[in-house]
Length: 151
Image (cartoon, rainbow, N blue to C red; front, side, top):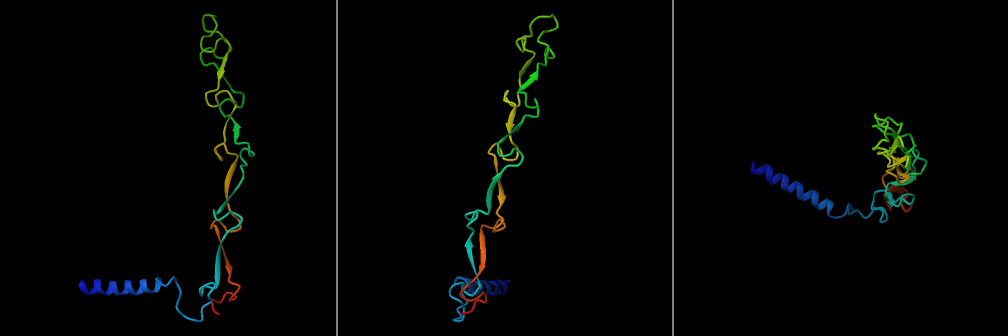
C-alpha cells in the first residue's frame, strides 16, 4: 500500500511541475503570442463577455405585461355572492360588491394585466449570444504564427 501512495505522489509532482509553467512547454520554438496553442482567446465584444444579449420579449411584445387570464383583461370578476346582479337573495343591495355586481379581479388587482411570465415584467429576455455561442469568449487563430503555434 505504501508503494502505491509513493508512486501516486511522484506522478502528482511531475504533473504539477508541468502545469506550474503556465502551460508553456519550455520549447524555444513556441509562438510567444499564443504560447504554442495556435489561437488567441478574446472577450466577446457583442455580449461583453456575458454569453448572452437582451432581446425584446415576444410573449408580451416588450410591454412586460399580458392580459389577465382570470378576468380576460376586464379587471373585474362577477360577485360570487350575488352572481353579478348586485342584489342578494332578499332583493337587498349586495354587501359583498356594494350593488355593483362585480369586484376587482384578485389576480390583477383590477388592472386587467399581470406581469409576463416569460420576462417577469421586464419586457426583455436573455438570449444566447450568437457571436460566441454563449461562451462569452471568441477563439481566433493567432496571426503571429498562422495557427500552428510555432515561431
